[in-house]
Each structure stands twice: as C-alpha cells, then as structure tokens.
Amino acid sequence: MAVTVATAAMALGHLSVEQAQTAMWSEKKHQPFLDTNSVPLGLLIGAAAAAVAIGLGLVFQGHANLPDVGLLATACVGVPLGMSVLYGTNIAFLRGRPRAAGRAMLVSAAAQCLCLVTLGATGHLTVETVVIVWVVSFAVSLAALCTSGGFTLGRPNPGVAGTTCVKGLRFHTGSVAAYLLLRSDVFLLNALGGSREVGIYTLAVTLSDLSRLAVDVRAQVSLPAQCAKDVGDAAVATARIVRFMLLLGVVSGVVTVAAVSLLILPLYGRAYAEAATVVAWLVPGIVLLAVCRPLSSFLLRMRSSRVVVLPSLIALAVNIGLNVVLIGTWGAVGCAVASTVAYTVLVGFQVTYFSRLSGVGWRCLLPTSVDAIRVTARVKRRCREMRIGRAS
Image (cartoon, rainbow, N blue to C red):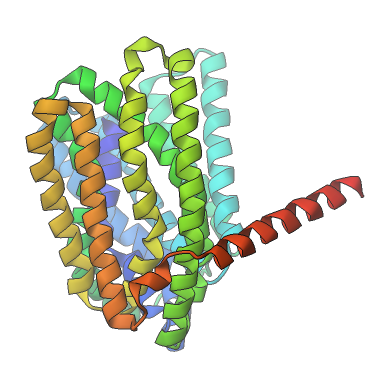
C-alpha cells in the first residue's frame, strides 16, 4: 500500500510535464532548456506530490488499510526521484538516445532484484526493506541516466520551466483520465465482483501487458522521427511507424494469447484457468492502445488540449459504464470486455483526429502486403547478420 500510494502520487502529480516536453521539442530554441530543466522540475514537482500524499496519509490514517506514516514517508522519498527519472527518460528518447534510457532501466532493475535476493537469502526481507529498495532503485536509475548522457545537468531556466508546466497542465486532465482508464477497472471489479475475480483479473492484466513490450519499445525509439520540424514529414513518419507496429502488435498478441493458454494451468493451477479467457479478451485492446501510441505523440505536438483530453475522458466514461453493466453478469471477463471496448473508443478518436489534422487518411495506417514483405526481409537480414557475427 505504501508503494501504491507513492506510485499514485507520481501518476497523478506529474502535471504531464513529459507531454509538454514532447509538444515543445520541435522548437529548437527550447530543446537545451527542456533538457537541463528535466531533473530540477522532477525533484520540485515530485517533492510537492510527495508532500500531498503524506498529508492525505495523515488525514486518512487508520482508514482504507493505509500504512503508518513512517513507512508512507519512506516510500514517498521515491516520488521526486521517480518523477526526475520520468522526465529525464523522456528527454533521452527525444534526444535520440534510447540506449541511455534502456541502460538506466536495466541497471535499476538489476540493482533492485539483486538487493531483494540478497535480503531474502540473509533473512532480512521485510516490508520496510522492500520499500527502501524500491526507493533506491529510482536513485540508481537517475544516476545511470545521468552518467550515460540521457540528459544534461545545467542551470535551469525558470521561464521555460514555467511555460512547460502551464502547457503540461492543459494536458493533465487527459493524463489523469488515461491513468484511471487503465486502473479503475480493478477497483470497480473489487467493489462489484469480489476478491476471487480481482485475483484472476490482476493476473490476466499482468500477463496481457507482456504483449505490448516489443510495441512500446518501438514507439519509444521512434519518438525523434515524430518530432521533425515539418508537420507533414512528422505525419508521414507517424503513419509508417504505426503500420509497422500494427504488424508487430498482431504477432505479439497472438503469441501472448497462445502462450498463456498453454502455460496457465501448469504454472498457476486450475484456480486461475479463467485467466486465459480474460487474457484473450484483454490483449486486443492493450495491443491496439500500444500500437496507436505514436498517434498520441503526434497529437501532442499540435498543442490542442481538446484532441488529447476529450478522448481520454470519453473512454473513461465508457469503461466505467460498461464495467458497471458487465461485471455483475460476466465477472472478470466482463471487466476485460469493457476495457477492450473503452481502449478501442480511445484509439478511434485518436485515428480520427490524426487524419483530420495531418491530412493522412486512416487507410494509410493499415499495413499492406508490401509492408509485410519489407519487415520480413529486414528480420531475415538481421538474423543472417547475427549468425555471421556469432560465427566470426
């Protein structure tokens, strides 16, 4: 619960600064200041979000299964660090340095796992030490991101920082709605379906998220191509990226559903057999949402809060309404159906706005046989190069 509160503080309190960074990056004059402002802004805004979370913890102490204030405060130390990692990682991708961002995430995960294994082996694994390790993992990630050149340390620019925060706030309602779109279903299922359904659904969500890993990586490394100064060039690049990601997403989704169907019983037992069906309903929506992430990045550069905020609010309303109707009848499966429909509604709005603002027809987002042949040829060539490299 301590980590959950701290994570919610980051998710709801980041003020959508990273979206503002993306929207402003096409202007060359702002890029150096967006870079040097990333960590100071993260520490400042993160500290404010942590203070609010601790204050609410004091107000609701003894209710809603909240942890004691000491443990909550320890977890909240990670909020400014995590916020800085969020802004700094976004800058690294915008600067075309995905290796620096990936290295920082890998080092952080390795340090966290190593600490937990060591604590478990020595008998010191407690709630308190786990929370401390969680906080330290953000510090390790931030240090790795800095040393690998993901962002630049320098004197912050208050003027650009203020402009970034103001622009971020215009998008923030949409960010909060998008966060709730992905998380509200668990709370609704807990209230309307019971703990058994929540257990099955939570496992299904965890397994379904594996289908988007490769797609998300492609979206991140493609971000610089979408920040071209010319809007027309950025739109063409976005359509090309989406076509490739749709091919990748279909393959990833099919593999995930097939693997879960085969492995769910031997790994988790009959009690979780229903999770395979839930995964089959969740994966299409999750993959579709991941595939259309470049459309969201393109819409950010248009700097219209309406095209970013309104779709998320409508999708959230659809998700809540369908969950209320379907959970009582179908339980976790109904929750999955509601989520997939809501994700599809959000993507439908994004495609419509992208077509209107860019002049690129929605059919240009669908892969053709030529795209499939090109991708297959690239994969074969890459595999051949890897075999040659191993032989050498």
